[in-house]
Length: 372
Image (cartoon, rainbow, N blue to C red; front, side):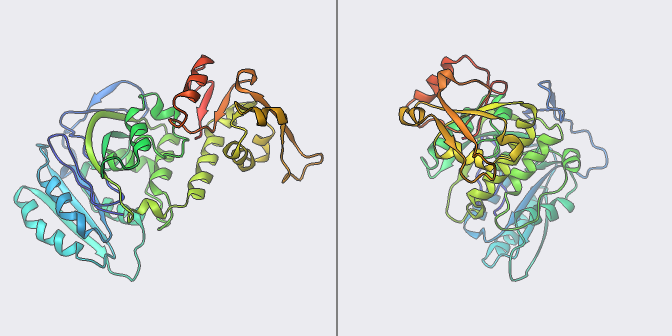
């Protein structure tokens, strides 16, 4: 977990592993919660809100990054009213002294600062800290929220998570929806989320399960369940730090996997009478084994390019309680029947897989989805 920070003039830094961004709301537009493509200007008319924007800052042992973070808040060129909501989740370092030091500077620039937290022996988690900060905020828009607007990012140190960074910055607007099932997680990454308070109230609070809970992914899924749209501002407004202490590293891959499978079953497989799994190898077989019995029965085949797998002819699900054991045929991809769930990792075959997929003239989100 870490702090949130925003900056003007097209850049932003983060203080740790879970952060959010204001994509300069005076200059950007957003989609409506219905997810339509019609864009509208952010409405800053005052109603019962004391501020235009509330910056939500959960903090846990973020001392080494807070000066840079809070400096970027100070330099934000947004002209409306802002407040900073800090929630200390039992930090044991110098985080709170640093925040108190910055409080006067921020308030001298008319950025109201609210500081709260707890000092128990253990942190209660990212979701808990976010929810407590939101409860004390008074802005119409929250800097982290999700209806969802995001932006492109630059990684620090340069070159870290190269494939992931290329993926997150290269998605088309349509792929922000179609590629939500991939292992990379939310297609609009959490450090750049921004939306209205009304939309947060509609979605609900963050999961407070604590360490190991992917509260951002779960919130992202709930946004989609409730008809939320996504929009990405195609400018690099976030300097996204990669480091070993980020909260995201506490989330097990298997936890992410299980949530992805359930969401895939809910959103896609429930609508398909049958489908093919593209990849007869380890990942494809794992997906098959992870499916509900009902959806396993919808798998008509695996497909691949590996001649040894194709020659074998079928995959036998030995763990099944059925007798005889299910045997799923394996075909070359050109002979397989869509729709496909694709378990082949992107950007790893020198363009070979992407070329094979393109040769079939299929439509993403209709004839196939990526689950790589």
